[in-house]
Image 1: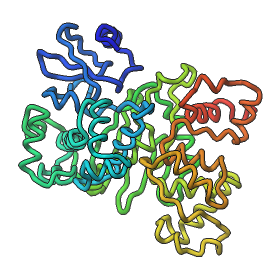
Image 2 (image 1 turned 120 degrees about the vertical axis):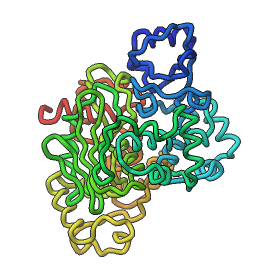
Image 3 (image 1 turned 45 degrees about the horizontal axis):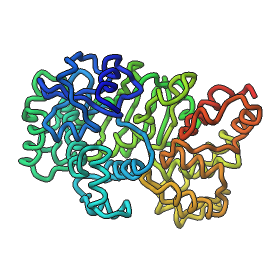
Image 4 (image 1 turned 30 degrees about the vertical axis):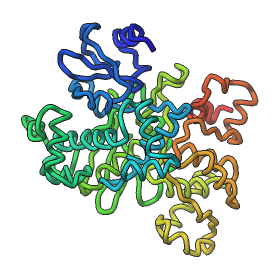
Length: 424
């Protein structure tokens, strides 16, 4: 896209391009999202493909549009699919336990080819992406909690406090301590954070779906909020109505915060760009999975029985065995009338084609189940359980055009359930 076109997008603050590119202001060395209310002179603008590219060139995030914690683009075409899988692996890996070589190996390519793809699509190296993502989280924790800087540095993945301080100052043009000034903070026992989402966001439909599919003993929906119990702690999620998910983390150990945030991003479909869908979608989202294995088990149990019956079976399973994959591997679940595929090993960074083949090869798993697992557990936004009763009837009657939702049929799935459940 030419610079003149990008400037017009910024001028009208077009939300359809939020997350697809960023712009910097030469005079201030600040970078922003296309929807930022700032109005710099066009001649002072410079453009970047990713947050990391902007930061690698000395630009710091805007404090008005939160360009460092804004949701990223979720466009998955061509080699961008490999880049997206790489980003998922980075998010799924704690601390500094991942090298560029290891990342390339997981993706089945050379580290040289991996660097080339990241540079082509994101304008930054894998290492730069890893570092800036750690710093973005660190900035949030510094601003919003009373944890010590050394605790935060270790929690986000820096083993050297000196290296953390240097990297933070290089990105934000200020030492970490500056972000502690005049900030209202919460204790690490009860942290209050936020995740940015693009509007519109159909929170009510998201809550209704999760309420019907809660896992007994570990999650709950009440008063239009989602609650997840994690060990001795919990996380509560509510929606502000203004493009922010408000998170209340109670007794979640600081080193676990990154993992919890990543799971919540997956569950609430934070990276989606609603303007890619037909206008009638009105903010529909795909509910993902906080725990992929747990959600897959629930989907398999629910494939042949009603939702209420499935919840009863899941309650029985949780009370008898829990949801630990290692425990279920050898548990005699047949004694409580359940038959599960125990070979499931799912992550959102899995290869979609290969995982579909593996799932279909397991006895008892059919096409509907595979599509539901691909959609909720693997992050496949084009998964489409066409054999679902409601979907099948709508499509047979030609009430909706599948082509209008090309490559994003997972959203069509939830749109059809929202619009036609109980009416067809």
